Length: 79
Image 1 (cartoon, helix red, strand yellow):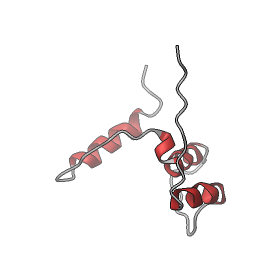
Image 2 (cartoon, helix red, strand yellow):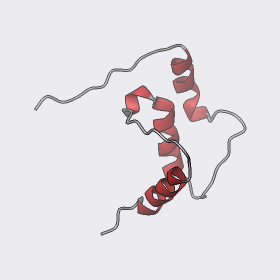
Image 3 (tube, one colour):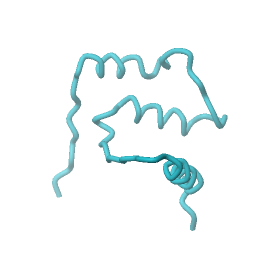
Image 4 (spheres, one colour):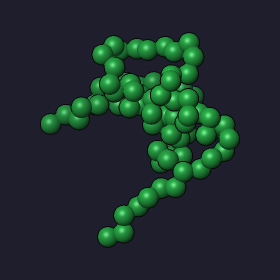
């Protein structure tokens, strides 16, 4: 079966291949709460594209914490 985000991944790969030099690095969602929240907001949208004139209300507290350098721990279950 095809992954539900296969077309998005394909588009990303195409766009990356068009750039002269690209470095991708994994970042846990705890290191970038704003990007994680935007991703979740985007997945809930009924439209293909949204452009914000100002920071979405759902991100205000996260952005403030990011500006202040507040860190959030990553909880990993011990098995």
